[in-house]
Length: 306
Ligand code: GYE
Image 1 (tube, rainbow, N blue to C red):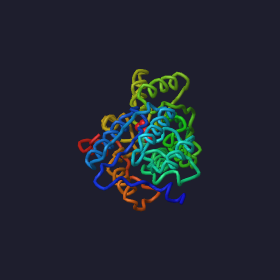
Image 2 (tube, protein in one colour):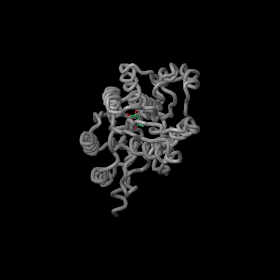
Image 3 (tube, helix red, strand yellow):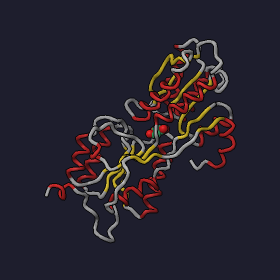
Image 4 (cartoon, rainbow, N blue to C red):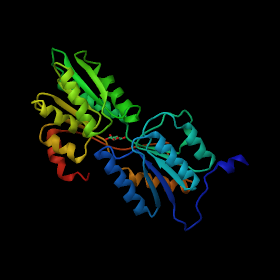
């Protein structure tokens, strides 16, 4: 029957589980920590991990996934660089009977049977947390507060959602205005370059909202080069909470960090195991995270693993 043909083919007893993993790239400190977590956890679980880096290109990820299908891996996991355009290749995996697990970033496919589960953060909530701190910080402001935004990779779930969550909250105060918003591709180099352009084009910038620490760190270089004090002349909010972000926050250069946990490896391996064992997995596994002011960052820094 067709049911059985499309069902997951469990590896023979005693055989190592092979996991094909397609990573986004190596664009940020978050990503480095995430890759290490996946590699370490696969090792601990005794899986045979095939790992590829797509250098932030969807075409490379599609190629990697097709390779994993050809190699008949037991499970494919990937962190989709952008949200759209996955249906065809996901259908190919499904037809081959290879289960797919999404990690870190989501896809916008209407057909949710194309993947078993999605393990990752709630990026809209992260954007809201950033917005709440800002609304609170500027609750007595009588004048317009000029905000510039460094967006993550265009079309990626974290860029779309962190923007949406932030806008949803700040619109409660009409004084809070995003005067410029551009992608910095989640990298330091791009964050610096775009901030330089913002500083040139804008008369007055009060706040920078960066979708990740790396872009904020690049922007800090641009702000200092312009003779301004990051964290004072320009208030800075970022997302992730990697070590370098915490260091900058401890120095008062970043005012508020919304945490996004990159250590998804252990949860991913558990899900892989459950899928191979034919167990039910919940369609959505959300990771737990917090928020940090400069003071919190100073206290927390010695405990950061990444
Ligand atoms: O915030 C950023 C990375 O998808 C959550 O990707 C991840 C994001 C993370 O490049 O630093």
